[in-house]
Image 1 (cartoon, rainbow, N blue to C red):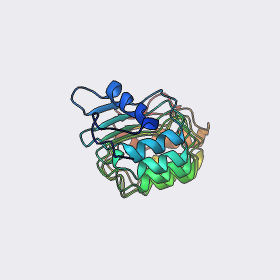
Image 2: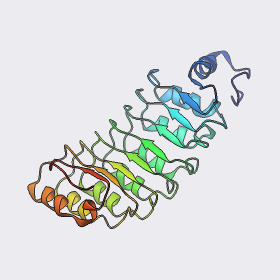
Image 3: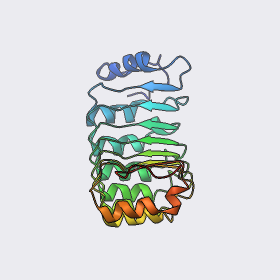
Length: 231
C-alpha cells in the first residue's frame, strides 16, 4: 500500500475514500485539512496514520468523530501529524491512553494549539500532558468537559514543561479543593494568561482561594464560578 503524500497519488481501492476526503477538505493553500464529522473510528484513523503524509498542513480539524485511544496512538506516531501546529480533536472518545500518546508523541513538537474538549480524559491523561516534553511549544490547551480531578489539576498547575502555555481551559471537569489550591498558587505555567475553571465541583473554600490569588489577579482573564477574577 503506497504512502499518500499528495492528492494525486494512486491508492488502493479500499482506501480511495481518503483521497476524496482530502480533495474536499484541503484548503487552497494546502495548510488546513478538515476531516471533522466524518464518523472516523479507530480503523479509519489507522488507515489515515498509515497512508497520509501531507508536509504542508499546519491545521487539522478531526473533531466530532468516534476516535478512541487506539486510533489516537496510531495517529500520534504517524507522519500525518508531524507538520501540525494546530490539532482540533474535540468531541471524540479519547481517554487517558490517547492523551498519553499525544503527550509522548515525537511527531507533535511543532504543536501550538490542542483542543481535546468533550472527550474522556481523566487525571492520568492530564498528568501525561502536563509532563510532556514534546508539547513544549503549546500555547493553548483545551481540556474542558472531560473527567479531570484534583491530581490532574495539580499536575498542570505545577507543570514546568508547558513553558509557552498561555491559555488553559479546564471548565466542566471534576476539580475540587486540592486542585483549586494548586491552581490558585500556579507555581508552573509562568506564561499563562487565560484560565477557565467554571463548572467544576463547587467548593467555597477553593473558590475563595482562587478569588484571592494574586497570581490569578495578574492574569488577563480567569473564569470560575466566582463572578470575576483577573484583568
